[in-house]
Image (cartoon, rainbow, N blue to C red; front, side):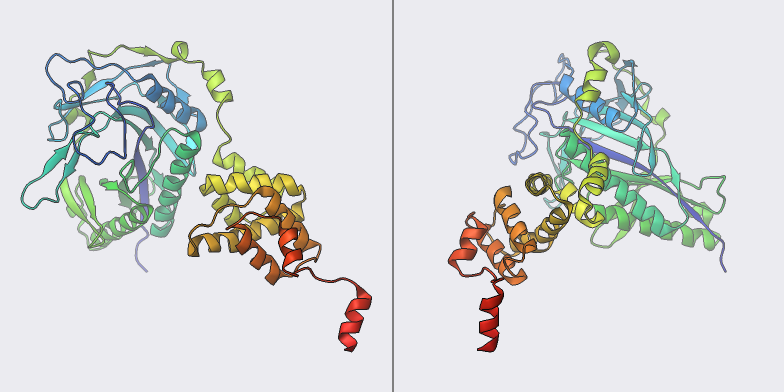
Length: 427
C-alpha cells in the first residue's frame, strides 16, 4: 500500500460588489453593459492629474460580509498600491489593501477566514480576435472584494474538492442574501482561486500551486481534483522537485491545469500606502452595532429555522434557500397552512410537481399562497385524489383560480357518501 498524502486547500474568492458606481470614480457599475469602453472616465483610465475618491457603499458592503462571518472589523484601515504591469491595469498598479484589511478572521462552511479586503477590478482582456487581443475597460475600477481563507488540510482528494466547492457555493449564497453582489460566476462577477498543496507529513505543507480564475463550481471541483492527482503522482514518482510554486490556469476543454507563470511573493508587488486616499477609522465612520442588527436572516439561520419549524427534508431546504423567490412563496404557503404535516405536503408538491411544470413549460407562474394552501388542504382531507391534485396544480400555475372551484366544475371531488358509494359498487 502506497504512502498516504494529505491535500491542503486555501481559497481566494473575488466578488464584484453591487454598487451604483465604480470604486474610485462616478462611472456606472453595470455588469450587463455589452458595448466596450462605455463606462470609463479619466479617473478609471488613469489619466495624469486625476485623483480617486472612495465609494462608501463598497466599504459598507465589505463590512456586512465581515459581520455575517463573525470577523473582526478593523478600526483603522487604509489602501495600498500593488505594483505590477499588465495591459489590463491602466495605472500600472492596482489600488488594494495589504497590511490593514477591512475584515480579519471569521468562519464559514468549514473554513477559517484569514481576511476580507477591498480593491479595484482590472479591465477585461478579449482574446477571441485571432492573433491579437483587445481590452474592454468597463470593468476597470469596479469595487472588488477578496476573501482569503486559512489553509485547510483534508484526508482525501475527494474530501478536499467537495469541501472547497461547498464553501464557494455557501459564500455565493451569503453574498446574495446580503445583497452585496450579484456573484454570477458565468459573467465573472465571482471568481475562485485555489491554493493547492500535497504533503506526506501532516506537520509540513507541500509546495503551493495557485489555480486561477475558476468560473464555475464544477471547474472548482475538477481543477482541485486534477491538480491534487498531478502533484500526488509526481511525489509518488520521487519527482518532488518538479512541483514548482507557480500560478496555473484551468483548461476547461482539456480538463487539465497548465502552467502560467512563477508565483510572485508580496515583496514582488512593492506594496506601499496609497497616498491619494485618506486613512479610515471604520468604528467612527459606521454604526457597526446597528449594521449587525439590520443584517437579514442568513442562510445558516434559515436552514435551522426551516428544520425546526417545518420539519422538511435537508435537500428540500437547500432548494428553497438557493431560489429566494421560491423560498418566500413557500413561507407564505406555510403561514397559510400553519400545520407541520400540511407544510411537508406543500413542500413535496412544490419540489416534485411545481418545479417539474416550471422546467417543462413556459408561462408557468407561482399561484397565490392561498390557492396552494387550499389545494394542500383538499389533498389531506381526501377531497381530491393525488392525480386530480396534479391536474389542478397544472391549471392554477397558468391561471390562478380557486382549486375548490376547479374541482367542483370539473367534477374532480371525491365522494365520501357511503350510501352513494354502496350503490355504485352494487351496480
